[in-house]
Amino acid sequence: AAMTSGAARKRLDMNEYRERLEARLGKSREMMRVVLNKAKSNPKRVALAEGSNEKMIRAAYQMQEEGIAHPILIGNTKVILRKAEELGLDFDPTIANPRDGEWDHYADRLYDLRKRKGLTESEAAELVRRDSNYFASVMVEMGDADAMLTGLTHHYPGGLRPPLQVIGTAEDANYAAGVYMMTFKNRVVFCADTTVNLDPDEEILAEITKHTAELARRFNVEPRAALLSYSNFGSVRNEGTAKPRDAANLLQDDPEVDFPVDGEMQADTALVEDILTGTYDFSDLDEPANVLVFPNLEAGNIGYKLLQRLGGAEAIGPMLVGMNKPVHVLQRGDEVKDIVNLAATAVVDAQEE
Ligand code: ACO
Figure (tube, rainbow, N blue to C red):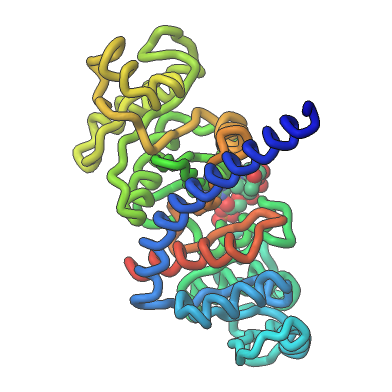
């Protein structure tokens, strides 16, 4: 009897688990559908720096088949075509091989951009031929592609540095930041910065907040932002809690900011309506925040992973905000669906250029 009830309980657990999984996948699909449909309405050219990677080839096939993007696979033409065939993918991909003479002017461009940062002419030629992250960055910088994706085969900083050096930040930005969209059964939150700025000051936090709010709007989400800390509105005063507090003040005084924002506050204050409307009824937020800005990279990176692994959220990202052109640096181990989702986000970004 004990065996049966144990098995039954297990089955029940599995059913419950499946239901929860379907519910959250449903929400993330609904969120992504907005972006996928926007992308399909006007697909753009996306340079895939790791073009000979099998996941990238699969993702390129899917983007092309579904009309989400025009992928450009960067790498050795023969290798890519052979792998596509081995994978049974029947398509005629656009390939850019950095070793082809037709791209020699990319080395000149890279040299031009970086010669006053210590790069020599021969180093530029070497980087463009051997490091596809530089090649893809120059391709986007020169307008031969509209967006770039990389990161599957590199440490995150290794994928990030070339586009930071070559493409740089947008006119209204000084800092890039990595945002994860976390979807739960009935809600969605955007977490920043999860991947770039180690110890942002109040100016950087304010900038990250603005760019994350803009990103939320791309997903048709009206942003409500909270600057997070371990104290509520000055309940603990020190250098650490001052940064998010000062960032909130900067944003509240900024005439361009057209969304509610407040802080510093604890995570539960940001997320629980009763706390916001009860204890802290003076807060500029009267509904739970959906843009969560963490005080530093440790908190942001740990925080979103806890939401994903313990909170059961589906994570879409990291979406790089603040860049001059759409660039996303994937995480190693990301799957084909992650690549396609980020490509769609990049296309929608590129449409707004
Ligand atoms: N935003 C925009 N541009 C930046 C930023 C930033 N936050 N930081 C550096 N840059 C620019 C610099 O201005 C510089 O441009 P320049 O050469 O034209 O002057 C260029 O990027 C390179 O800067 P460096 O100082 O040479 O590079 P650095 O070694 O500081 O690297 C980097 C910058 C890669 C962003 C670094 O800060 C970093 O490693 N951050 C943490 C990344 C990380 O480990 N994330 C966590 C794990 S990721 C994950 O979970 C997926």
